[in-house]
Length: 78
Image 1: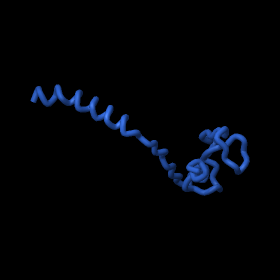
Image 2: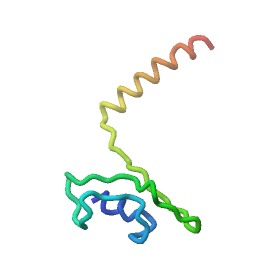
Image 3: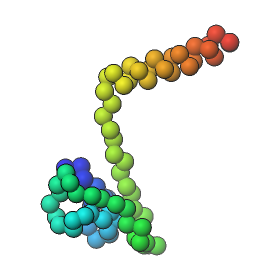
Image 4: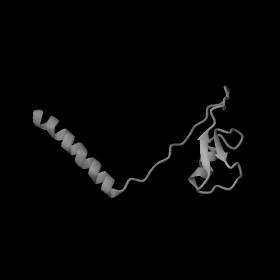
């Protein structure tokens, strides 16, 4: 579903910023998307939305522990 909005980007279907293979309208899990390096338009700015990934609670806790460990030395030095 996200790729359906991404293929149109915020520029609409008029501008082919992403190329889909195979080039039909239906989006399947096996489809491949790539950036159209030949796209140019001097009169338009195209905004590409970023894909937001979901971070699990375990990953959050592991990151927090790593950051806390890294900061511990700086806090002790101060």
